[in-house]
Image 1: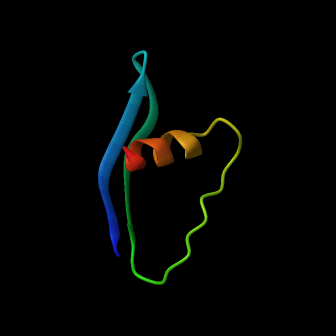
Image 2 (image 1 turned 120 degrees about the vertical axis):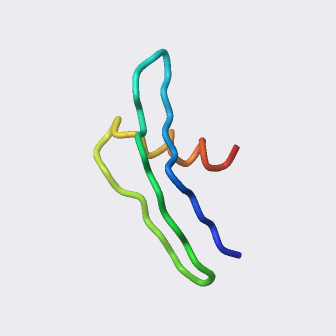
Length: 50
């Protein structure tokens, strides 16, 4: 299965949390999402899963 995300942006209460994110994950790839606390990692994953 291939996952493609194109130009995702998320705002909460008029505050931009994630802006213009694109990515592609192909079959048999392992991807890690890293970054400091509060940078939008969980918000990005939640928006992709919905």
